[in-house]
Length: 370
Ligand SMILES: Cc1ncc(COP(=O)(O)O)c(C=O)c1O
Image 1 (cartoon, rainbow, N blue to C red):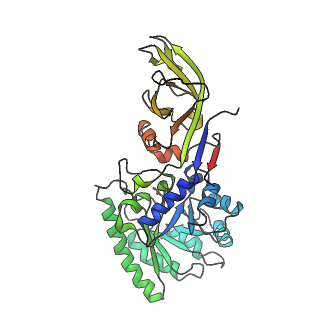
Image 2: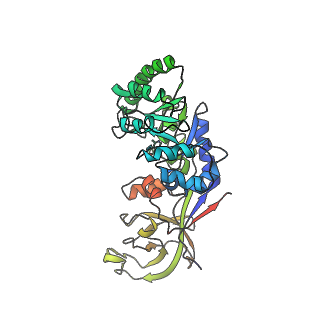
Image 3: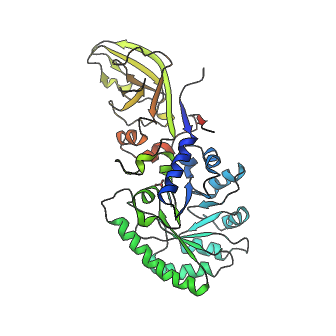
């Protein structure tokens, strides 16, 4: 029998979640964000499962886009960080990639490049996140540079990214929308003059689910496709999502220990009652966070039990004293249906995005749902 650690990926749940995004934003088109190996779910399989639904896929860089092309994906692929060098323009032209550009340097790479197939361009505007994007005061000039270039296709998309879309009480999103709309109005004047149209995009998952005014020409859901809830609390749309990844393993050893006996590296959990300890094949080398403390839940026989002691590289110990008839080989769920990855992330002081995106290749992905 193979080592039982595995990530079961439910492609029906993925499609369900994509449909949730589309239903929330029926007047928008939805770019399915599949960067970082589709947040750890396997980019090629994820794209194949969504191919008949999503018009475009979003990745971080050309290497991620090429992986999809090499797997036979022919749809447009949006490079969310654009080109890292002038040579990437030619590749984008050959492959028909769409490019997000967020600086004068990137824009000049494109406008100065040898003529080729005109590219669909997303002009990224910094409306307050201050990470990437052109500044509002230079946006009109840079838009004109793009719009007048033969290397750029009509209908440039003005895009921005939200810093705090997942925090509904904070003012930043409204401020970003206002900045976006003021800049858009000025850009539209130039577009009218040139006989061009401007498309728009503001929303990531949180923006799609919670900020109606962010549902423009395009939405860009990522985390929600995988069933993640970015809000950290119940939310009408997020509650409709289904987890796509079930991180599973099984019991590989069982023992009874007496009061006072301690478990695992550092011997930092000691039994206060006669206890049954199950060892499971899962550890930090499988992407499970070492930092979690005793008390972090896993599911066995559909019941929550607690991790006890330190997470090791390949193993974790759990207290199954209260669960009847635990056997070697019994399945254990680390996160997934009934145990949201967001909850485990909170135990680890991080976000579910990180746990999913850094899931190592050592954990085999098993795809279900065709
Ligand atoms: C530009 C851009 N759009 C959309 C997304 C998707 O965000 P989320 O996973 O929160 O939906 C990301 C991810 O970080 C991004 O960088």
